[in-house]
Image 1: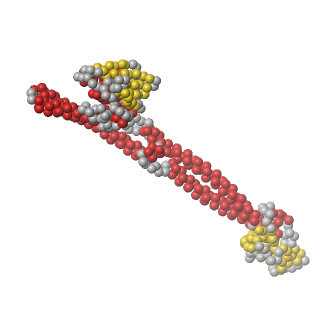
Image 2: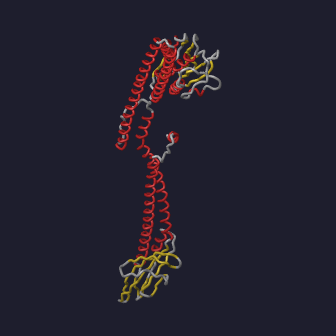
Length: 462
C-alpha cells in the first residue's frame, strides 16, 4: 500500500498501529518506572524496619539482663542479642551500656539518641567513618533503694540494609522490564486485532472490480461506521456519475452522427442534381468534409467509450471467431464500395473480457485496413490460438505503415507517412491499443507479405 501511495506522489505518514503501539509502550514504560520506584522505596523501607526491629529486640534483650547485686549494677551480655544482628547481614555492631554517666560496658564514645524510661528511640548517625543505625532503650534499676536509670544503646552499620534494598531493586527492575516487554507485545497484538476490521474492509474494497460499486454491508466497530457510511455515499455518487457519463457518450454519439449523416445524404442528392462542374466540386468537398468530421467524431466518441469502459471492465466469455465474423459483416458494405473482399480464416479462440471494447478494437483496425487498401484487393482476418494466447491478425495490401518503427502510431492523433489524401483522425490504433491493454493484451504492428500492413490483436486465452 505504501508503494502505491509513493507512486501517486502521496507521502504516507506513520501508521495508526505504530502510533498506538508506541503510545501504549510509553504508558507501560512510565507505569513500569513508577512501579520500580515504588518497589525500590518499599524495599528500602522494609529493610530499614527489619533492621530497626532486630536492633530493638537486641537492645531490649540486653536491658532485660540488668540487675542489682550488692549495690552494684550487674550485666551479662546475652549471646542471642548479637547473634540476631548477624542473622540479617555481616555489618559491624557497636553497643554501649551506661548507668547514668558511668559506662558499664561497650564503646564509651557511642552516642545514641536521647531516650526516656520505657521508650525506644532510633536514630541514623555517623560513627567511626560509617553510617550506622542506633537504638536506645532505658531501664530503671533499684540499687540500695536508689533508682538508677540504665541506657542501652545498640548500633549497626547500614551496608547490609543497602545491599538488601539494592538487590530487591534490581529484581524489581528485571521484573518491570519483563512486564514492559510482555505489555508491549500484548499491546501490539491488541492494536493489530483492533485494526483488523479496518484492514478487512480495505481488502474488501481493494478486491472489488472497477464496476462493483455495491455498498459495504460488513458490520464493524461503531468507530468505523462513519467511514463505512462515507464510502457507501461516495460509491453511490460514483455510480451515478458513471451512469451519466455512459448515457452522455451514447447520446452524444447519436446527436453527432445523425445530423452528419443527414447532411451527407442531402449533399449526395444535390451532387446528382446539379450539372455545373464548379458546384459538383464544391459538393464533393462538402461530402469529404462531412465524412472527415463524421469519422473524427465517431472515433473520438469511441475513444471516450473505451476509456470509460476500461475503468469499469466487464468480464464475460467472448468467442473471437463469432466476434470477428460479426465485425466483418458490419464493415463488408464499406469494403464492397471499393471492391475489397474480406477473407476470414477462423479457428477456436475464447477470451474473457468486454465484448463491446473488443468489437471496437477490431472494427477500428479492420476499418483502417479497408480505408488504406487499394480497390479490388483482399483484406484477410485470421483468428488463431497459440499456446495461452488468442490472436486476431488483420492483413491488407495497402501502403503499410511507412519507413521506420510503427510503435508511435498507437499514440493519439498520430498517423503514418503514407496517408496523404485519406480521411482519418489518428485514433483507430489508439482505441485498439487501449482496449487490448485493458484486457491484459497487446497490439503489435508489422508488415504483411507483399508490403501491406499487418496488425496483431493478442489477448490472453481461456
